[in-house]
Amino acid sequence: MKSANLWLAGMVTLLSATTPVRAQQSSIEAFKSWPKGTSPEEIGKKIASRFIVTPHTNFNRSTPPKVITYPETCTWYGALTFAKVTGNKALTRQLADRFEPLLGNRDTLVPVPDHVDYTVFGSVPLELYMQTKDERYLKLGKMFADKQWGPPEGKRVTAESHRFYNKGLTWQTRLWIDDMFMITAVQSQAFRATGNRMYIDKAANEMVFYLDSLQQPNGLFYHAPDVPYFWGRGDGWMAVGMSELLRSLPKDHPNRARIMDGYKK
Image (cartoon, rainbow, N blue to C red):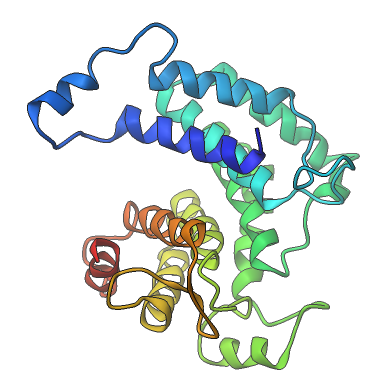
Protein backbone atom coordinates (compact mmCIF):
# COMPACT_ATOMS: atom_id res chain seq x y z
CA MET A 1 0.00 0.00 0.00
CA LYS A 2 1.10 3.55 -0.63
CA SER A 3 1.62 5.67 2.48
CA ALA A 4 -1.07 8.11 1.37
CA ASN A 5 -3.48 5.22 0.96
CA LEU A 6 -2.61 3.97 4.44
CA TRP A 7 -3.43 7.40 5.83
CA LEU A 8 -6.69 7.66 3.93
CA ALA A 9 -7.75 4.18 4.97
CA GLY A 10 -6.85 4.96 8.56
CA MET A 11 -8.86 8.16 8.59
CA VAL A 12 -11.84 6.40 7.00
CA THR A 13 -11.83 3.73 9.69
CA LEU A 14 -11.36 6.42 12.32
CA LEU A 15 -14.39 8.31 11.05
CA SER A 16 -16.42 5.10 10.98
CA ALA A 17 -15.48 4.46 14.58
CA THR A 18 -16.13 7.94 15.97
CA THR A 19 -18.63 9.85 13.82
CA PRO A 20 -22.30 9.63 14.86
CA VAL A 21 -24.34 8.06 12.08
CA ARG A 22 -27.40 10.17 11.32
CA ALA A 23 -29.17 8.10 8.72
CA GLN A 24 -32.04 5.67 8.38
CA GLN A 25 -32.35 3.01 11.08
CA SER A 26 -31.16 0.30 8.70
CA SER A 27 -27.93 2.22 8.13
CA ILE A 28 -27.42 2.65 11.87
CA GLU A 29 -27.89 -1.08 12.43
CA ALA A 30 -25.25 -1.81 9.79
CA PHE A 31 -22.66 -0.04 11.96
CA LYS A 32 -23.45 -2.08 15.07
CA SER A 33 -22.32 -5.50 13.94
CA TRP A 34 -19.01 -6.13 12.17
CA PRO A 35 -17.83 -9.52 10.87
CA LYS A 36 -14.75 -10.74 12.70
CA GLY A 37 -11.64 -8.82 11.63
CA THR A 38 -13.51 -6.03 9.85
CA SER A 39 -14.40 -3.52 12.57
CA PRO A 40 -12.93 -0.01 12.28
CA GLU A 41 -10.78 -0.63 15.36
CA GLU A 42 -9.36 -3.89 13.99
CA ILE A 43 -8.64 -2.45 10.54
CA GLY A 44 -7.16 0.73 12.01
CA LYS A 45 -4.84 -1.31 14.21
CA LYS A 46 -3.64 -3.35 11.23
CA ILE A 47 -2.93 -0.21 9.21
CA ALA A 48 -1.07 1.45 12.08
CA SER A 49 0.93 -1.71 12.77
CA ARG A 50 1.90 -1.89 9.12
CA PHE A 51 3.10 1.70 9.24
CA ILE A 52 5.27 1.14 12.31
CA VAL A 53 7.38 -1.54 10.61
CA THR A 54 7.55 0.21 7.23
CA PRO A 55 10.82 2.07 6.53
CA HIS A 56 10.56 5.77 5.72
CA THR A 57 8.96 6.01 2.31
CA ASN A 58 9.89 8.04 -0.76
CA PHE A 59 6.79 8.29 -2.95
CA ASN A 60 7.11 4.55 -3.77
CA ARG A 61 10.62 4.95 -5.12
CA SER A 62 13.11 2.25 -4.17
CA THR A 63 15.54 4.78 -2.69
CA PRO A 64 15.15 6.16 0.85
CA PRO A 65 13.89 9.75 1.20
CA LYS A 66 16.14 12.68 1.94
CA VAL A 67 13.50 13.98 4.37
CA ILE A 68 10.17 12.75 5.73
CA THR A 69 7.61 13.16 2.93
CA TYR A 70 4.10 14.52 3.35
CA PRO A 71 2.43 11.11 2.68
CA GLU A 72 4.38 9.68 5.62
CA THR A 73 3.52 12.70 7.75
CA CYS A 74 -0.18 12.18 7.02
CA THR A 75 0.05 8.47 7.81
CA TRP A 76 1.86 9.20 11.07
CA TYR A 77 -0.74 11.78 12.08
CA GLY A 78 -3.57 9.41 11.18
CA ALA A 79 -2.02 6.59 13.20
CA LEU A 80 -1.50 8.83 16.22
CA THR A 81 -5.10 10.04 15.99
CA PHE A 82 -6.28 6.43 15.84
CA ALA A 83 -4.16 5.57 18.89
CA LYS A 84 -5.70 8.47 20.83
CA VAL A 85 -9.29 7.66 19.87
CA THR A 86 -8.91 3.99 20.79
CA GLY A 87 -6.89 4.68 23.96
CA ASN A 88 -4.04 2.51 22.69
CA LYS A 89 -1.11 3.89 24.69
CA ALA A 90 1.18 1.09 23.53
CA LEU A 91 0.61 2.18 19.94
CA THR A 92 1.33 5.81 20.88
CA ARG A 93 4.62 4.64 22.41
CA GLN A 94 5.57 2.75 19.25
CA LEU A 95 4.79 5.78 17.11
CA ALA A 96 6.86 7.95 19.45
CA ASP A 97 9.74 5.45 19.26
CA ARG A 98 9.64 5.77 15.47
CA PHE A 99 10.08 9.52 15.91
CA GLU A 100 12.92 9.38 18.46
CA PRO A 101 15.80 9.09 15.92
CA LEU A 102 14.58 12.32 14.30
CA LEU A 103 15.45 14.09 17.54
CA GLY A 104 18.94 12.57 17.49
CA ASN A 105 21.28 11.05 14.94
CA ARG A 106 18.71 11.08 12.11
CA ASP A 107 17.65 14.69 12.47
CA THR A 108 18.60 15.33 8.86
CA LEU A 109 15.32 13.61 7.95
CA VAL A 110 13.38 16.48 9.52
CA PRO A 111 12.22 18.71 6.63
CA VAL A 112 13.08 22.39 6.40
CA PRO A 113 9.75 24.25 6.87
CA ASP A 114 9.99 26.35 3.71
CA HIS A 115 7.11 24.79 1.76
CA VAL A 116 3.61 23.62 2.67
CA ASP A 117 4.47 19.97 1.90
CA TYR A 118 7.33 20.15 4.41
CA THR A 119 5.74 22.38 7.04
CA VAL A 120 2.83 19.96 7.54
CA PHE A 121 5.38 17.68 9.25
CA GLY A 122 4.91 19.83 12.35
CA SER A 123 1.49 18.27 12.95
CA VAL A 124 3.18 15.02 14.05
CA PRO A 125 5.39 16.33 16.90
CA LEU A 126 2.49 18.52 18.04
CA GLU A 127 0.27 15.44 18.30
CA LEU A 128 3.03 13.54 20.09
CA TYR A 129 3.31 16.41 22.56
CA MET A 130 -0.41 16.38 23.28
CA GLN A 131 -0.32 12.64 23.94
CA THR A 132 2.98 12.40 25.85
CA LYS A 133 3.57 15.94 27.25
CA ASP A 134 7.21 15.69 26.16
CA GLU A 135 8.31 19.31 25.69
CA ARG A 136 10.78 18.36 22.94
CA TYR A 137 7.87 17.68 20.63
CA LEU A 138 6.19 20.99 21.43
CA LYS A 139 9.37 22.95 20.70
CA LEU A 140 9.83 21.29 17.33
CA GLY A 141 6.17 21.49 16.32
CA LYS A 142 5.85 25.16 17.28
CA MET A 143 8.92 25.98 15.24
CA PHE A 144 7.22 24.56 12.14
CA ALA A 145 3.96 26.39 12.79
CA ASP A 146 5.75 29.69 13.50
CA LYS A 147 8.00 29.51 10.45
CA GLN A 148 4.93 29.24 8.25
CA TRP A 149 3.81 32.70 9.37
CA GLY A 150 7.20 34.32 9.85
CA PRO A 151 8.98 36.46 7.25
CA PRO A 152 9.81 34.70 3.95
CA GLU A 153 13.14 32.91 4.15
CA GLY A 154 15.15 30.29 2.30
CA LYS A 155 15.72 29.25 -1.27
CA ARG A 156 12.03 28.96 -2.15
CA VAL A 157 11.19 32.63 -1.55
CA THR A 158 9.75 34.48 -4.55
CA ALA A 159 8.28 37.90 -5.17
CA GLU A 160 4.87 36.29 -4.73
CA SER A 161 5.93 35.03 -1.28
CA HIS A 162 6.43 38.63 -0.17
CA ARG A 163 3.17 39.72 -1.78
CA PHE A 164 1.15 37.16 0.18
CA TYR A 165 3.08 37.85 3.39
CA ASN A 166 2.37 41.58 3.10
CA LYS A 167 -1.36 40.75 2.80
CA GLY A 168 -1.29 38.96 6.16
CA LEU A 169 -1.22 35.48 4.66
CA THR A 170 1.46 32.86 5.01
CA TRP A 171 4.35 33.39 2.63
CA GLN A 172 3.95 29.70 1.68
CA THR A 173 0.61 30.46 -0.01
CA ARG A 174 0.37 29.00 -3.53
CA LEU A 175 -3.40 28.87 -4.06
CA TRP A 176 -3.21 25.15 -4.76
CA ILE A 177 -6.07 23.26 -3.13
CA ASP A 178 -3.83 20.71 -1.37
CA ASP A 179 -2.43 23.61 0.67
CA MET A 180 -5.66 23.72 2.64
CA PHE A 181 -4.81 20.52 4.42
CA MET A 182 -1.07 21.15 4.62
CA ILE A 183 -1.53 24.60 6.20
CA THR A 184 -4.63 24.04 8.32
CA ALA A 185 -3.40 20.74 9.79
CA VAL A 186 -0.24 22.15 11.37
CA GLN A 187 -1.87 25.43 12.44
CA SER A 188 -4.90 23.68 13.98
CA GLN A 189 -2.53 21.34 15.79
CA ALA A 190 -0.53 24.29 17.13
CA PHE A 191 -3.76 25.80 18.47
CA ARG A 192 -4.75 22.53 20.13
CA ALA A 193 -1.31 22.07 21.66
CA THR A 194 -0.84 25.62 22.96
CA GLY A 195 -4.31 27.12 23.29
CA ASN A 196 -2.98 30.17 21.42
CA ARG A 197 -5.84 31.36 19.23
CA MET A 198 -3.41 33.15 16.92
CA TYR A 199 -2.70 29.87 15.13
CA ILE A 200 -6.27 28.97 14.27
CA ASP A 201 -7.15 32.60 13.50
CA LYS A 202 -4.45 32.67 10.83
CA ALA A 203 -5.50 29.30 9.43
CA ALA A 204 -9.15 30.37 9.25
CA ASN A 205 -8.22 33.60 7.47
CA GLU A 206 -6.17 31.60 4.98
CA MET A 207 -9.03 29.16 4.40
CA VAL A 208 -11.45 31.99 3.59
CA PHE A 209 -8.96 33.35 1.06
CA TYR A 210 -8.77 29.93 -0.64
CA LEU A 211 -12.56 29.49 -0.57
CA ASP A 212 -13.09 32.88 -2.16
CA SER A 213 -10.40 32.20 -4.77
CA LEU A 214 -11.04 28.58 -5.76
CA GLN A 215 -14.50 27.27 -4.91
CA GLN A 216 -16.88 27.15 -7.87
CA PRO A 217 -20.70 27.48 -7.92
CA ASN A 218 -21.09 23.67 -7.91
CA GLY A 219 -19.17 23.48 -4.63
CA LEU A 220 -16.03 21.92 -6.10
CA PHE A 221 -12.62 23.56 -6.31
CA TYR A 222 -10.29 24.29 -9.17
CA HIS A 223 -6.78 23.02 -8.60
CA ALA A 224 -5.48 26.62 -8.82
CA PRO A 225 -6.69 29.89 -10.37
CA ASP A 226 -4.72 29.12 -13.53
CA VAL A 227 -5.62 25.40 -13.51
CA PRO A 228 -9.42 25.39 -14.01
CA TYR A 229 -9.94 21.66 -13.53
CA PHE A 230 -11.56 19.59 -10.80
CA TRP A 231 -8.98 17.29 -9.24
CA GLY A 232 -10.65 14.59 -7.15
CA ARG A 233 -7.96 14.03 -4.57
CA GLY A 234 -7.34 17.75 -4.32
CA ASP A 235 -10.99 18.38 -3.51
CA GLY A 236 -10.53 15.72 -0.84
CA TRP A 237 -7.68 17.77 0.64
CA MET A 238 -10.06 20.73 0.85
CA ALA A 239 -12.74 18.63 2.56
CA VAL A 240 -10.41 17.18 5.17
CA GLY A 241 -8.71 20.55 5.66
CA MET A 242 -12.02 22.21 6.45
CA SER A 243 -12.90 19.32 8.77
CA GLU A 244 -9.61 19.72 10.65
CA LEU A 245 -10.24 23.42 11.03
CA LEU A 246 -13.93 23.33 11.92
CA ARG A 247 -13.59 20.72 14.65
CA SER A 248 -11.44 23.15 16.67
CA LEU A 249 -12.51 26.58 15.37
CA PRO A 250 -14.25 28.44 18.23
CA LYS A 251 -18.01 28.75 17.82
CA ASP A 252 -17.78 32.54 18.03
CA HIS A 253 -15.07 32.84 15.38
CA PRO A 254 -15.95 35.50 12.78
CA ASN A 255 -14.88 33.20 9.92
CA ARG A 256 -16.68 30.09 11.13
CA ALA A 257 -19.94 30.72 9.24
CA ARG A 258 -18.07 31.40 5.98
CA ILE A 259 -16.01 28.22 6.28
CA MET A 260 -19.01 26.12 7.27
CA ASP A 261 -20.88 27.46 4.26
CA GLY A 262 -18.01 26.44 1.96
CA TYR A 263 -17.86 23.02 3.63
CA LYS A 264 -21.56 22.33 3.22
CA LYS A 265 -21.54 23.64 -0.35
